[in-house]
Length: 107
Image (cartoon, rainbow, N blue to C red):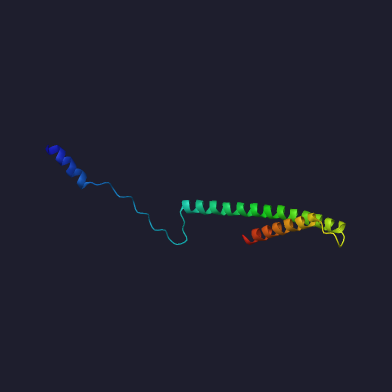
């Protein structure tokens, strides 16, 4: 019985060691984990920018195509006839132009 009680006493006197405290870093010094995280964030931001730029190029190419089609439709109509296609094309251009504008603001 004494041995069981003695074992409990030894545990109470020798608790688990607390984790080692982090040494304070000097200003301007970063840990490898912080550097890796920072690099990953920069890479992700760069990729997002590249994707946004590619989308802008696609959208502006499409805007040019739609504007050219709109001009062709308008050239084929006369002053008393406004084609439904012209109105639809103008609406499509307006929506796409708004989308391009919002993407440009996103930066």
